[in-house]
Image (cartoon, rainbow, N blue to C red; front, side, top):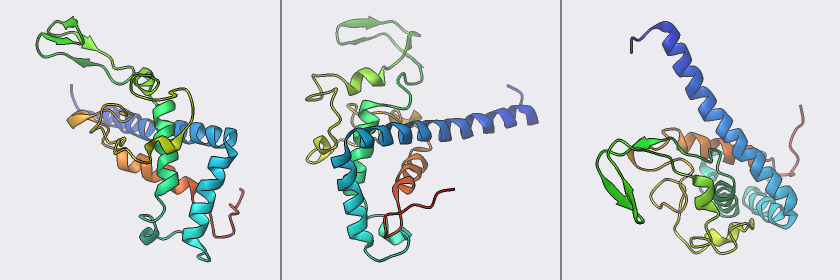
Length: 183
């Protein structure tokens, strides 16, 4: 491909849309689930208020403290409502066999992340929004465990994973009174 100004503009547009659209999709689903489960929303709010006490705003040094219930909600939302239900397609480099299926060389493979998040073999009560399921397990969304791969996995995983999570976490922070300004 020849690099032109037009190509660069389209590439930047694609990166911007990929980074913002998926983040907003995650935020919408998280808010919908919290509205449907007000007791969980209350836990997240109480945790943030307890940590922040009388501080007017969240500082960068506070971020590591505000992780527990908010992180659980983010993981559970990513499991139940992955922003991209079908991950980017890949092409097999050699003949292989996956769970009894022969995959010839140069076969395009698409991973259904939505189905992984609802697999009853992997998840107890897979259709239910239960953030506490992540309390005592090390599964994370960074692509190291294949039970939860909303940002894909391996060296071709999403380069904007930390930006996306930081954007979602930032969205939930309020001042110490619990009131968010409205535009």
